[in-house]
Image 1 (cartoon, rainbow, N blue to C red):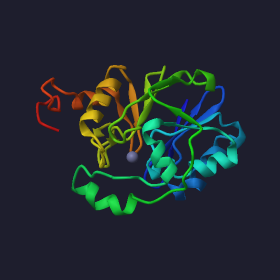
Image 2 (cartoon, rainbow, N blue to C red; image 1 turned 45 degrees about the vertical axis):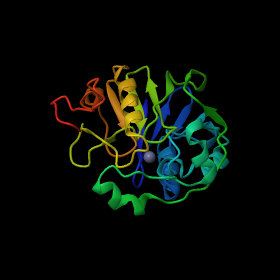
Image 3 (cartoon, protein in one colour; image 1 turned 30 degrees about the vertical axis):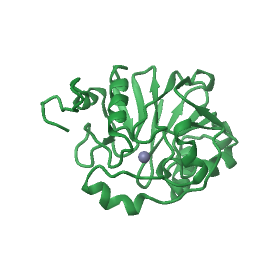
Image 4 (tube, rainbow, N blue to C red; image 1 turned 180 degrees about the vertical axis):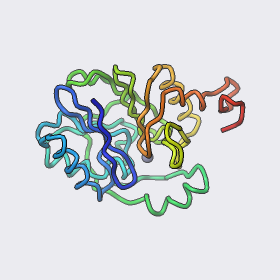
Length: 230
Ligand SMILES: [Zn+2]
């Protein structure tokens, strides 16, 4: 079972299998929200099997160090973002639109630095942690972005795309992206999974078919299915 934990600006997720896995840890001020969610679902901190980070930005890795101290769970992060975790800083947040430039000063905050315990490069199975699914690299938003693809057809995709502020069930390009072309290849990679539902790092979830709106035509240009450039 997948549970969304709404934090101040981002989402964390709880995966409830044989043991709980926490995906992302919110921004530095989100600790109490996460602790409350664990309490509501009657999960003790020492039951957490793994803290998995979709990437190393402060609104996802913000409470990772503190939650590791309290739970003793290991932190898994893709090698591409290990430097962000060690520095406790977001690095360059490349805004993709006017709104991104507007919100950047408010979301670009430092967080407690840490050394990840499990550094992966491509994919790994979550079966040893009691979850039917796997983690796969989906870089672009950051060089070390990763997604969780569950056998149920659900996926937690970090900031590969975001949900819409206004419309339910709609995918939207994220405010920030380090490498848009690389991100498009990651969207293709996710689309090949035939996902039923995607759970992003910001705002609400959307059907997997929404990924089709962002696929490349083969000419290198990213087009919506309607033929309009994204
Ligand atoms: Zn991010």
